[in-house]
Length: 361
Image 1 (tube, rainbow, N blue to C red):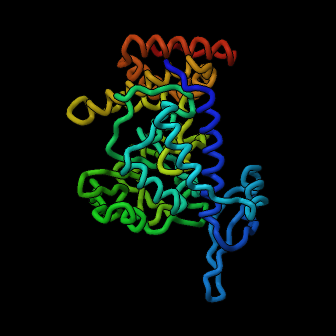
Image 2: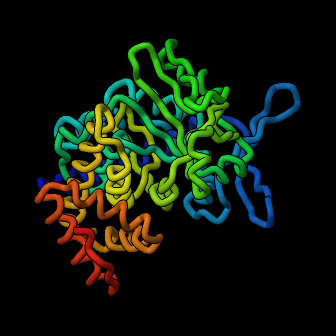
Image 3: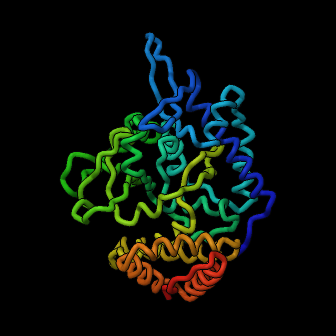
């Protein structure tokens, strides 16, 4: 695979840091940080005066997170440098071989991020997240794996209940981008909505993990932190969104986002592909899942991240026969190059971590 030059990798890292600084300044323009103890754990909150002698409290994060602690200390010193960051985004996409989202996806994620989506520990998943792996892995991704017409967001159910904060009303945020966004009636007939679409059919869907019986899969779950949106529970999703990584989406001046670890994403795509129907739009989605997984296996092997893939694979494999069957079925759909890349990466990774599991192909 063609690698991205070190100069552009360095520029992306700088852009990510500066975009995160700017996002914090935007999230917390006036007020003060306040430590709060909840269930014997300390968290940072931000108190904003409401102009009437009261205050609004917003969740920031764990006091044990050294990055958050450092940002609290440096809060007053952070400054926005919008124009310089926008030039950096242009350079990275036009010259560096990195990927920008389509305008609709970028604008939606920008609005949600400004509303606090990633501060509230949601994770961007799906193809829009996959596009960021060009920068994370420093490789050029093939165009056939990059196209999308929707945005998928996941949040852990427990986190949504525990942060004691929320996005503004989700439709208000979406209407900042396109007034035609409306809730999609849920297939179960429930009044709650977990997905929204505009007049052109662009869709945003909210998801959460399900570890219980499959009977819960057709019922939307209330998510207090998502501004009135519910989320569809999905099996295997907890594996995908565990230990996510921070990066920057190359839209406008850069948007700090949180995405799944690319190794987890690749293994998860095998599982998802094995469970899709084989007709119509599902067949197309399944084929894209497999192409993305194969591309990531090759990229992980090429960039010496085989041990990361091996650890993710081992974790999934050890979850039991149902997971193993799904991984095998997905791996069987890979083309010859994808299978070879998977075998090479896992074999190398097993040696590096000193563990071994059966290969899926």
